[in-house]
Amino acid sequence: MTREAIRLNMIELKTADQITKMRKAGKVVGGLLEVLKAAVKPGLTTAELDELARQTIVRLGGKVAFKGYRGFPGNICISVNEQVVHGIPSQRVLNEGDIVGLDVGAIVEEYYADAAVTVAVGAVSKEAKQLLRVTESSLHEGIAKARPGNRLSDISHAVQTCAEKAGYTVVREFVGHGIGKQLHEPPEVPNYGAPGFGPELKAGMVLAIEPMVNLGKPAVRVLEDGWTVVTKDGNLSAHFEHTVAITEHGPEILTKQ
Ligand code: MG
Image 1: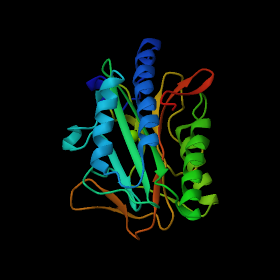
Image 2: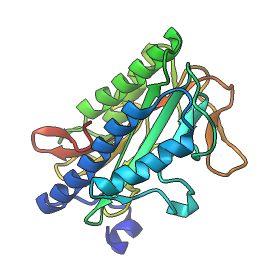
Image 3: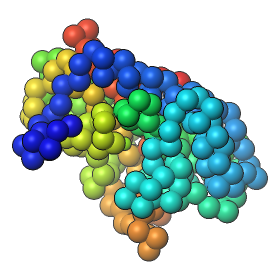
């Protein structure tokens, strides 16, 4: 993204060559999430998961993307239960019945990919299971709208509709984003809003679409560590994310697992 583009808040259209590089970064991120999902089990600390993530990113040929980003201390973000996003890896032990959000990024050839999943630790409540299922569905409903000719808020609206139909709420304060040579580029991709607004979607746009869905009320707050976002009411929250390239033929998920 050029400085000019940032100043004008323009959405960069990626060339085929740039998308090829982002596909490589996406492959690292997708592979990493596969490894982490398989590793999650009761008794593991989030710091252990974070170290596994670092080793796996390097093994798959990428560079860690989040560590040091605006001072973030972890290699990845790990958010447990009522934590929404941006949880810092620590000595916290995962317990049976927890849900754990894994938000990961990697850089390959200077390009970023960004994706997240929320997974069950051992057996979890029916309530938690359904929250995970619906949040992941809301991501895919949003992705389905990522095609040329649609408007940006068609994605937002699809996510919100799916989550609210199930009786859940969507977080307003944090949003998806464009992605490329920068982790966060224009445009912002909210998880709520009426359809038919915002910029027209075009082939070459690459978006990180990332619903954050709460079981209770939508309000969130940031803990004193300056990073961890939690639900104000203490209820569970789930987060799923993919980096998606808009092509002439529709959405291409670059971070498939
Ligand atoms: Mg993101």
